[in-house]
Image (tube, rainbow, N blue to C red; front, side):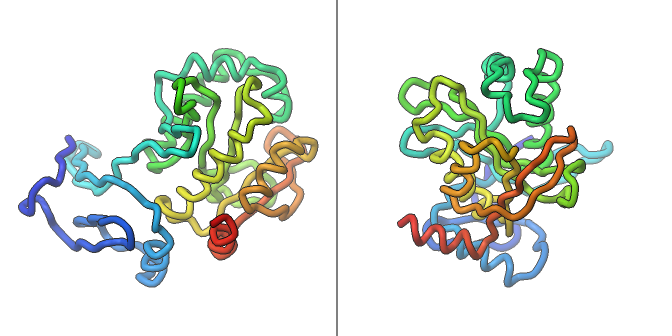
Amino acid sequence: MIVRLQSAKAAVGVAFETVSNALLIVGQPFCGYVAQLASRIADSPRRNILREWSTSTIGGSNESSYRPLVVNLQTTRLILEPWHERHRVAWRRICRDPEVMRYIATGEIWDTDKAGEVFDSALTHWREHDFGWRSALDKTSGDWLGFVGLNRLGPGIEGVAACEVEIGWWMTRAVWGRGYASEGATRIRDEGFERVGLDRVIARLQPANVGSARVSEKIGLRFERETTAASGEANHIYALDRGDWRRQLKSET
């Protein structure tokens, strides 16, 4: 059950404001160091998040937890919508495009079962972590153009911690070369450091994927190392930490 905080009677805990918009924190336990939290709040001038009080049943007992109501993100040309069931068919189509899949894992197209497995995993990631893949929708037509998003890497990448968070993007072939990937990835990068509160973001891509390498560099990531992915293919790791992200923001303004 979700109950909106519409009156002072519902407010419990501590409230404070960010620089540009009020961020109500109610009954939320402080995690980590206060200094780190304060730094992240200071880094969030563009944050615009609605908050709700969520009461869920866990292990047979009611447990209240404080969770963000995540909203769509927007860029000049895109709406970035949290992963949703209604785009499953479009997802299946992109997974069957051999040019899109050329640099994904072994380079083979995915059948319906594999595409569905990955789609469901992306939905689960949102439920567990409150961030994840977002559908990239054309702001004018509403057409599904692909996805841009963040996800926890998980095990299987040689020498890279499973807790790392990676940024990634797939775009339908019809819109390649029009800057949608870098436009969406820039906004997702900022979500990672602002709303999600990350200290570091990585991208992993196959060495021959020069297009994605250009996108990575355009949004501020830099080549860090070579490694081997779970399917045995070579991967290049690009990375961006919080300090370099701040400097990147200044250069973009």
